[in-house]
Image (cartoon, rainbow, N blue to C red; front, side, top):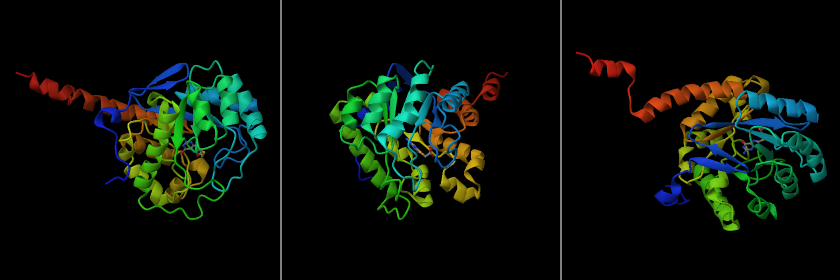
Length: 306
Ligand code: 7PJ
């Protein structure tokens, strides 16, 4: 039994689209969010895209590879990371957000600071991705007063210390209760459910066991009636399973993204867009046959035979 009650069946039906600023994203098929880090210390690609030009070029490449959203972040939230001042975060992300304002897909800003949210939204960003689920004073109001989408993520503790000793009663139930609460707070602040995405926050104050249990039971979160986003790309649990360094976790990341989608995720946040898209296209091709309730050409031929 889950501690957080599911919404009524009517409300629990996930809207088939996400309102995202001037964009409306169809959720009929799983979407890929491409990661654009503009940080000197991100664990997997830290420093590579710190120059705005390099970050913009990288974002454009991810869009060409089929990203439906690009997520621009200027504050590393990797385990042990120290907080970044707002001025520094703004200096990192704003040139990139500005350069992408006419991009063909929505730009998301990965930040917990209302000040950064406001600046990015004013410069054309269409989504706020907040690893603290709009906890900062003024964050709910900032998002409510715009038409952007928002990702509400669960984290236990804070990046500097979150991996020291994460403890849960039942990790899925605890995360679900938190997210139900934040979806309620967002709705109460005037953020329509059609703008909201939830994320269990893989790796954010969670052991490998916690992450795997959340992935196994991800479908329980879909009961909250908003789309689920999953971020497994290159994360350390994949390193502990495969023994590989962050840069060599492509296959493991694609596998995790695929399992997340199979277990109900509608958006996956990844570094490697092209490979993830290919894997999801195979999943989608099989899914479409499931939806048609059709066993395919061979069975039809057999039925229509003499
Ligand atoms: C996540 C994120 C995630 C959401 C990061 C990394 C570490 N935002 N920001 N979900 N992870 N919504 O890039 O791997 O899992 S930072």
